Length: 161
Image 1 (cartoon, rainbow, N blue to C red):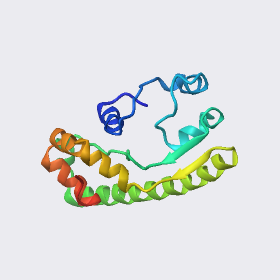
Image 2: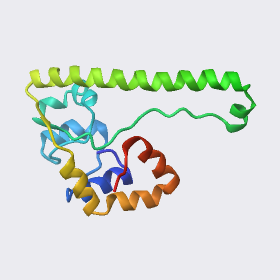
Image 3: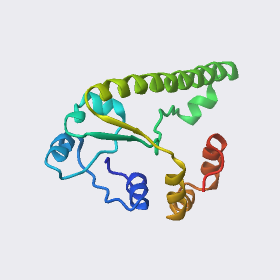
C-alpha cells in the first residue's frame, strides 16, 4: 500500500499487517509472496499487469481519492464574482463528469480483469464500517481532521462513526 497514516491506520483497524512498498516493487512483492495483496484501484491493477500475480480483488470501496482544485486566496478573491461563479460551476461539473468517467472505467476494467482470471469480489460494506467504528478509526480521524472538515465529509456521506 502507499505510505500514509490514513491508509496504514485503516488496515490496522482491520487487524491486518499493512506494508508500504514502492509501486515499482509491487509486482515482484506479490510474485515472491512478500505481500499477500495490494491496496490499489482497478486501473493500476490492469495497466501494471498485477492480475498476473494477484488472483483476487475485493471491491471494498474503503477509500476515495478525488481531484483538488486549489487557488491562491488573494487571486481568487480578486476575481469578479461572475468570473468566480463560472469557474466554480465548471469545476463542479467537471468533478461530476470525472466521477461518472471513473465509474464507467472501473466497470469496464472489472470485466477485463475478470476475463484475465482475476476474481472480482463485491462485499457488504456494513461489517467493515462496524469494524472501523469498534476500532476507533472514525473517532481518531475525526479528531485529526477536526469537526469542521468532518462535518463537510458527513454532508455528503451521512453520519460516520
